[in-house]
Every structure is written in structure tokens, then in C-alpha cells.
View 1 (cartoon, rainbow, N blue to C red):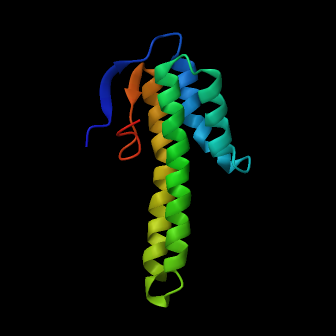
View 2: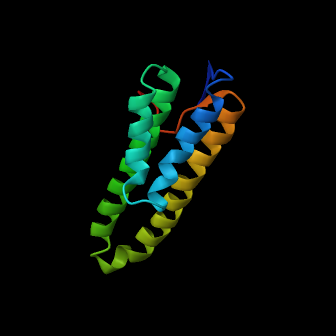
Length: 122
């Protein structure tokens, strides 16, 4: 699946674009920070389509991770699926950290990075 497009991030927006990708990780430090911080960036920088889109991706990634964890927690009620859910949580946690870091590194190079599945239609 293609996650990079030909959209180029201008030199003035690269730092903020990288920070916006990483702002989704704020939830690991501040409760609800992974959703609130990108929304604040989206509102403040609503004039920049690239920054706004990156902020939307950060929000939706955190919402999707939360929903996946909540639904898989229900699956843990069956004893048979506990090992499957544990492996799923590990992979989900790795993806939830790796995708914003990859996005920030790409943004710092001026390349627009779209999260797989999350950033398709934003």
C-alpha cells in the first residue's frame, strides 16, 4: 500500500508537520493528549491544508487504536482468544508508536506521509 504521495511539505512547515505527527504520542504522557494536542494544532493551523490533514491523521490513528483495544478487550472475555489479543496489542502498540515516528522523519525531509488505512480519505 502506497503511503507516500507527491505532496511536498514546504521548508517553513516541516518542523510543525513533524511535531504534528509526534503530537499523537502525547497521549502516553497526558491523558487524552493524543487527541487533544492534534485537534489544537488543527484549529490553530487551519489555514495550512497539509498540517490540518496530518493533525486529522494523528487524531484518527489514536481513535482507531482506542477502538481496537476496546473491542479486543471484549474478545479477552473468551479464554481461548487471550493469547491472540495479547499478540494483537503488542503489534498495535508498535504500530501506534512507529507510524507517527516514521511520519515525523518523513515530514522533516519534506515528504508528506500518509498513515496506512487511516490517512486514505482525509
